[in-house]
Length: 377
Image 1: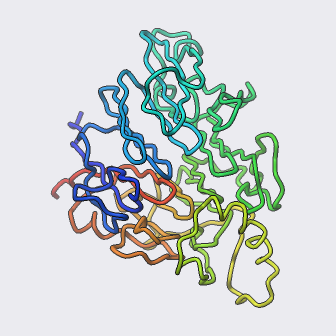
Image 2: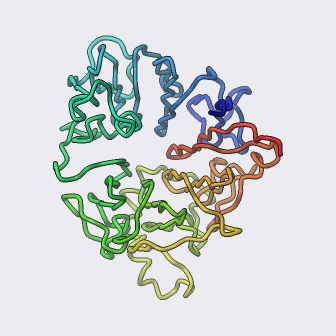
């Protein structure tokens, strides 16, 4: 077996609260990838708007941004503006789910605690299965429930749903089952559920448009969604306000001023939906795509990994290249500027440095990438 090459995490985009995006001095934003200013054994990154949680291979969680703290004995962490969730090791297969206020120093008592038995509970084996070990928050190790940002903090899933992956957007959820089928539920006013309407769904509903196609990964943005098929195709749908669907967009005043996502979620929802019928818009402008649309990357590249920020999208190809598009105000696209794009564009930094991208995780306004040195041919 070939030895695993050592890699490095990089970050770019918004760092206005001191997130450990780069190795230099404090800046409001980073427009080109820089190595993370943290320990080199990070195995997972979960980013919220104002802070980031870094999980190390030794089981340590480090918080950077609006709060700077750390906790030991952690298997996983999930960051949101409403909640910080830790999965802490209690010995054997026992873990404890802890919900903390996002500004907490991880001292005192958490908001909520639940004891879990992972892996062996459902497998009936001496150790968890590979699939169980690979699952990450907000999906719990048992795959029978997931973390919810508001009470109740733990929400059950139907027993018949054999879940492989679950992702949460600002108002919706995506679920990938073991059979490769995709389910969605939650708010649908931006078409982010993919069912062809702008209505909410209270329970997981199968995406009929993707039936018969086996998916390997799903990603939920603020108000858009994406999935990657086992053959490397990309399907994307939802809100296209900043070109995050890689579909033609209309330039707006938003690019010339900073608008918080919380304001957009309240003030611009109806505006985006109304744009569907805006006769003054160019004929090619697409505000909302309510069905999954097939997206081709340049050079007919196959996708293997994907992540979505609030209004930007990032995809890793089978050859280890990174493509990004959508909102770029804070440099979260990694193209050395703050331009927004409505088409996939390769992040040249990694190609120039002869780096092979292995993983990508988008925060709302930033992007984190894990890359290794390419093997010499």
